[in-house]
Amino acid sequence: PPPGRAPASAKQRSCALSSPHASPRPVRARSRPFVAGSWTVALKWRGMSSGAPHRKSSGRVIRRAVECDLDAIMLALSETVQALCEAGIEQWDDAYPDRATFEADEEAGNLFIMPDEGALMGCVVLSGHQEPECAAVPWTLESDEVSVVHRLFVAPRASRKGAARELMAFAEALAIARGSGVMRLDAFTENPR
Image (cartoon, rainbow, N blue to C red; front, side, top):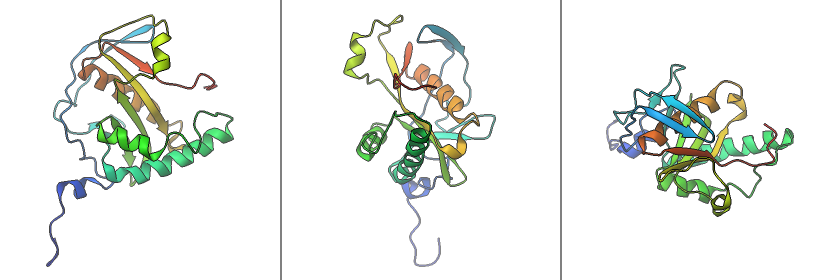
């Protein structure tokens, strides 16, 4: 550091969106069939055992979000909501999801982002929480351990470039690492895509 300036803490160093080094907990994946909805995917995942952020062959990084990423998440969300509304998709609005929701996701360690050159390409939340309405659904597949994808979005500038596919593949691998036998996607039933 420059004279008279204290070295940055680990948290301060990990806050830049361009920094891929904010994954505080190791993530371990194992290879086994993964069940999602009414189909099964055999998934072998490499590169997640070190606790380092995941890097796909595209060179994009997916890492656990930290508190200082929330401003970028909310900006990208605002742009995404506007683009969705312009496309006639009323999944989200100005009220939901809100900052408090993402803060809770981050605090629980369930919020993951895809940063790229100082901007946010997208994010995904993977948790074991299912909405109460889901309890009444007659699921084709059941498991003691269920992971649910919530609040998956890709910023408009990254749309149609494979970012959502990479975020979903990451979520699948993380669900396996967490011991889930089933992964569900929390989605708006009126979503035309």
